[in-house]
Length: 299
Image 1 (tube, rainbow, N blue to C red):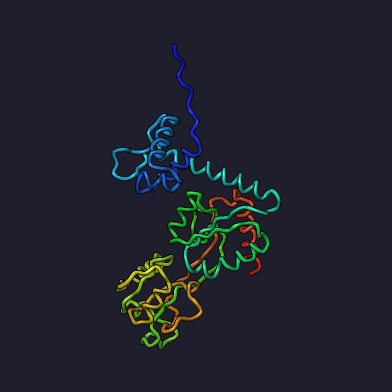
Image 2 (image 1 turned 60 degrees about the horizontal axis):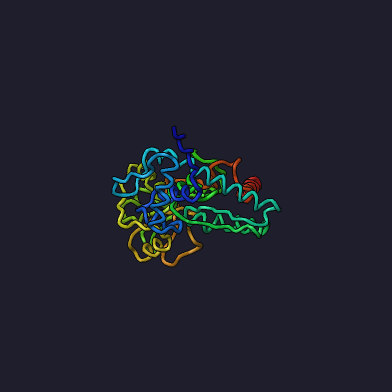
């Protein structure tokens, strides 16, 4: 009687393909992300499914869709690669943080312009051998990248109860109006008065907060444009295309043709540093976390 074949152990390359398949728009593009040809992608997927003894991708779906087994396995694969990254980071830091990489997410201009630069400048003065990589995306995408372990730290809007967080700053939503606009004559503007004019809505980090602000006041704004770039919003306002509402931390010192006015009632926004687990950070990420804590305590 033949003995059953011993189960095979998946390779890291095959598991990396499973990570790439999650959220991909096609099998070939998922493989291309990690440098695989289409034929190599198909071969690696078949080998992985054989090793695990179950189908991981639904071949009948129009797009790439993981089976129930694939979805159940995926978080463990993410944990595996997070552990590998931590091993590499710890090894690289064994000589006193002299080398390594730290990946950080930023939800938009507020953090990229005002919060991260001074924090990273001091960090890199202390640890010049650590390469810091910053990626800027909308808040929801940054959260997803934290969950998927693509980044270790992120500057996000608070609260975020699913993460360990460290408050960094508090700002407020302000009105941006053309310099010659009737609302520019007062020091502050009422939200209901602002809602009478065409609104250029930010499609970036403050969009949900702006929407909630209008909902609380039971006011329906007249949204005429949705823009993600702050400079585009400022230029549209300067040219009289409407008014806008943005977070004060995101604003440059000045922009020709617009004025900034406080809004009543006020809407505050808290911004902070986030991670999956503060106690499981790599040495480089832990060093930046401690630095941010020290700055907070001195304020």
